[in-house]
Image (cartoon, rainbow, N blue to C red):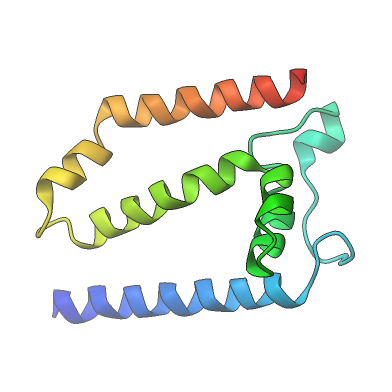
Length: 125
């Protein structure tokens, strides 16, 4: 019963991701009014860690890696890590060591430190 429920959640999550990627493929966040704007950028004028991610996803889906890099390099760098985190979560029973490493306190703090340095750096330069 639990295995069927977990499999259903994975299938639903996959379908949601495919639907979201389809929207990002067909609609450009630069030109579409239904994509949300960054509240941090609007209130402070500074870029948050995620600023440019929507445009970077759109560019990446169209094969324009250079433009995606210019919009948000950190997002591009964290994509493989995000996939590894998802795999570790899905196969926690099969790969417990990978799960424990990726979800350790030091890994989380390291990722947080990278995000903080990225946020400060992109607003200084």
